[in-house]
Length: 576
Image 1 (cartoon, helix red, strand yellow):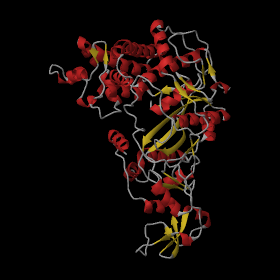
Image 2: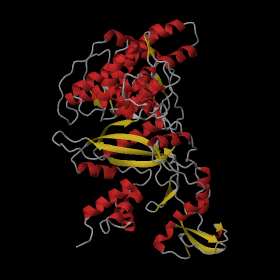
Image 3: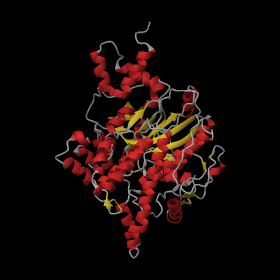
Image 4: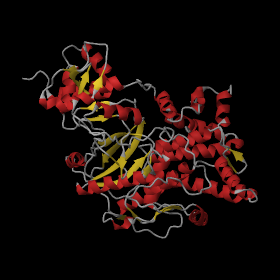
């Protein structure tokens, strides 16, 4: 009987992956003989058939995974996170990873950085930027109605990237994922992102939400969704959709919080100001203690741009009740209530479908009323001013464009999804009809203004290279309050080395004062089956085999690191 059974091996692998080397060694040394050693763990991981190759989409494995649960529908999420910038050698793919993976038609090129020349590797490390971000595509299975267990997410692909891509690249990549999934009998219902400007623009172009792709007809796809609805003046989404999009609500509410804490914004509705000073007054009030409001000074700290817990605290019932006592704080109360509605509608798991729909559209109509007031009252006083002055006024008094449109789009697609369920186009149980708001007059005005002022066109061929990623003229703030990706500026890794590979050892020369290479994977001879993992070079005019991992070590100039603290890590990533 083997010493370690399969369940223990699986547990050990999970502990190593999730906890890291230090955590695993700590547990193993404190429980002698209970866990496998590091060498065995790494061997099990390397020999596992589920290895992820950078830039390669695992459609076959995804289909096999979903079929094991009897699932044919899934939802895809895409997001980037900051990583330690470091070039490494992937022994399975015989390629180098850690560079910014070049895109072809929006799709990453797998195993792009593959070479048998150390000179070419050095050229790549000198000329191509190390990837500051890791882009991950995850697929979440949607189980049928009779299945209560929700399968875990599946990692479809991962690759290093920078900010050097456009909305059209994203759109092409989504269509690539959709097409290949259909071939595997899996329907990707839609995509979710973190409300980044580029991703949001791609969503608008694909959905036709006051945007258009002149050179691409989405209706040619046979898997289009189509709903039958009445002529609702407040509903702006077309009946035919290929995907159901969602902007991550957690990022959306943090954007709204950041707008409240922004030093450049002067939010106002009517004669009431929307300001963090009203929250500061609760903290400064000596008659109140933390038990009354639950706030801390860090909740009002604008540098912590992704503090979702702060969003929960500033929108708690206790805070809202205290804010409501002061008539001068009505504007701030409205804004905090807006954030609360989004949290209730999209994040809280116990909210019923009826309450989700009600809260989502309440937030939409609230923002519409606010914007219409701004257009009719506030901006009319600047009719003699320049267009730039009028736009700056809109930026100053309202939420960001991304936050506004994200709120709109989420509510529209939530309604669209419910209708798909009602019309039995998706494999979930039927939902009851819901009574929606009658805001015809306001919505007709807003519809006409959007149609005339905010139409987004893109005449670029969808499957040709296009670099134009600018938005149309719009009277809202175009800046993103916490766009981590756009603040990272590195050179793209799309350049290709021109030197041909050469197996001649005489072309690869290294000089050193050392004569012994203990601790380094430098050998005189290697087995034939391991030949591809080594560079053939000359060190001090002697033929040697240099392992490609060791070459990465020798050519690395800076050892970068990221803080284990999330806030510090985000700040570090934004500054690079």
